[in-house]
Length: 316
Image (cartoon, rainbow, N blue to C red; front, top):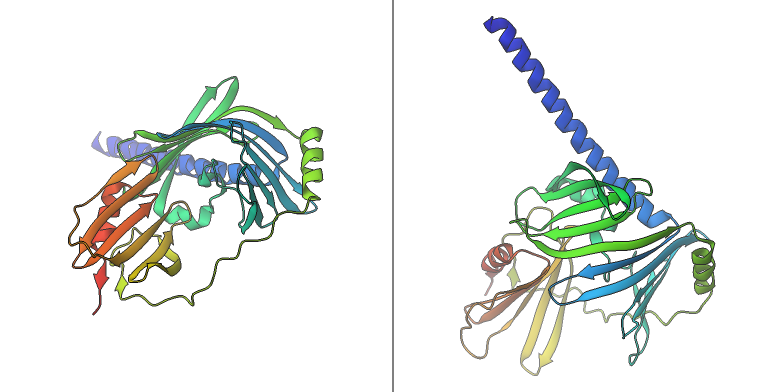
């Protein structure tokens, strides 16, 4: 009796294990299919982005023309801000300001970066979980959860169109599963000749010149970050003068999904109190260490920003 019970329990555990592995595999495949669809299909999406600061209506068009991505994003509000991508150049147009271009692989303004994330880069630090099927509007959707393995960063719930594999809704969550921001698609038009024609015409328009940031020789700092969440790496650093005796040193870090900066300057007014602020995905945390003011700005939970700031070590 005990022998058969052991066999049944072992068999059951193997089935559960296999189901869990299959579930994770399905989520991994689906995530890659979403990225592939978003970056290679010809489509137009109308959507809303919700954050504590604003509700923004947006129209986004995308196609591959002559082997290069061409995209157009227009904020459908009074400002009518427009962003255009041609290949690796992103151009910004806004009433009352000079147009300019920046280097980039895709438009991230008002579009969740998770859509374009490199799966192989972020996989070691997040669990991808198949959360089943649902409906959003009149569209059947597949649901995946993208959860930080160490609770040091934010999480996502992503609803993906079962047919097109394009995103339908993306929720950014804190570690208590509270929604910080939401991306929600209102309508999608796939393989429209009108969209292709409009982007083809746009691809032939001369864009504003590329804005080149001044190089300052990868400056050396007399400080370093002692603790970074796993997967975060320094992607740039800079130093700029704010006043005659006031210089701010900045290092940018990213894990391929979220980005934050560490900013250090000298304190001329004595010790400051901690000044934490979290608004949606954006956290600002300030502390002093000796005569140095440390400010963390970016896409981190407040608790993680506090740990990063507290780990900074200064050299004489």
